[in-house]
Length: 124
Image (tube, rainbow, N blue to C red; front, side, top):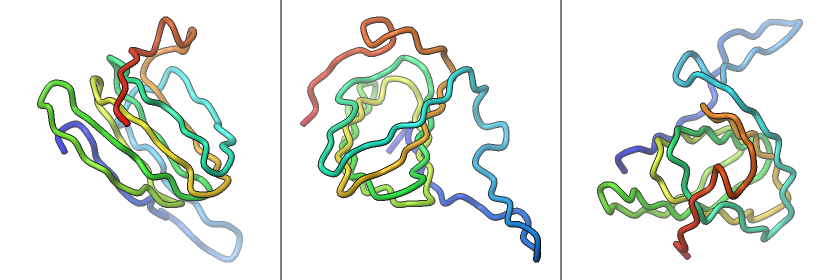
């Protein structure tokens, strides 16, 4: 889908002392980071932003419904532990956690509140 990229987190170094995983490498100028502790069957999103966003699934699995409102493309996909999803702006995103999950959300804009940052659009 235009505006969405999924990839695995890559290990850039590992030795007897440690393992180093790369999450981002300049793909997005980050202004805000959130950690979401989601409960099983919890629904998140069902809105869009006008700015890029990255979601890293640190633990668990999330089923996403996506719609690019600029191209009208839609797609469903599962994002698994250790994967990261890059989204441009104008992607309606709704996710359901199949189990308790920990997600890390990075965005290029500062979070103020839902009325300011989210544009609500029912997708599911």
